[in-house]
Image (cartoon, rainbow, N blue to C red; front, side, top):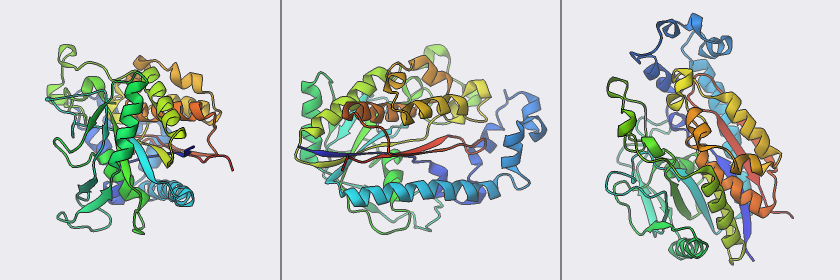
Length: 347
C-alpha cells in the first residue's frame, strides 16, 4: 500500500524578486483608469493597508512578508525530506503557458521524463537568464495516475512533451522555493495542471486585467472546472496512490484570493475574510465546506487559484486526515493570501 504526504505551499512570483519590487502588482493596479479617484490616495485606504505600505511603499513590509513565507516553505521542505517521497504530484494552475487557444483541457497530467526551465527574471539568487534548472519526472507513475482517473470516470488529459512552455511557473516556482536555500532538489515531479483561470484563461491570458481593453462578457471563456469536480478529482488521486507501491507527496501550489482578480475590492487587495473562512474549515477538517463551495464565490472573491487546493482538500477528505500544521499569511499590499499545510501519514 502507498504512503501519502499532503502539502500546500505558495508559488507567489514576487518572492523571486527583491523586497523593493514585491508590491509591483499593487502599483500596476493603481494605474487602472477606472479606479475611483479616492483610492489613488493612501489616505483612503484601510488603516492596516496604509500601515503595511508604510513610508517606503512596502519595502520594509516585504522583508517581513518574505521571512514569513520562507519559514513556512522551509517547514514544508523539512517535511518532504523526512518523508522521502518517490515523487511529488503538484496541482498548479496554468496562466496562458500551455493552456492556450489551440487546446484548453480542464486539467492535464504531465507524463514527462524530465523538465528544464529558466530562472525568473531579475531574481534574488542572481541567476543569469541563460541558466537552466532541471527536475526529473516519472512517466510510469503519471501514466498510472492518468489511467486510474480515467477508469474512475475522470476523462483526464495527459501529455508527453510541452506544448508551448517548458514548465508553468506554478511548478517551476514550487521547485525553486522549496530549494530556496540551494541545497538541491532530488525529487521527481508530476505536474497536474488545472485550468483555474477558467473564464479568463484566454480572455485575460491568465494574468492581470487589461483595463484599457477589458473583455466583454461575450468574450469571456467557458468556466473552470467546478470546486466539487476538483475536490472529487483530488479524492480519486489519493485513492489511486493509496493502492500503489509508492511513497507520494500530493501538493497544491498556489496563492488564494488575488487582488488583481477581486473586482469588488477595486483590484487593490485580496478577499481575506473569504480566505479565512475556507482556511478555518480546512484546518478543522470541515471538508463539506470545501466540496460545496460555489464556483460563483470563487470568481467573486478572486480565488481562482484556490481550485488547486480543492484537489488537496479532496485528497485529505479521502485519507480522513486533518492537517497537522497550517499557516495563514495575510496581506493588503502583496496581492494574495498565502496558505501552507502539511499532513503526514499517521505514524
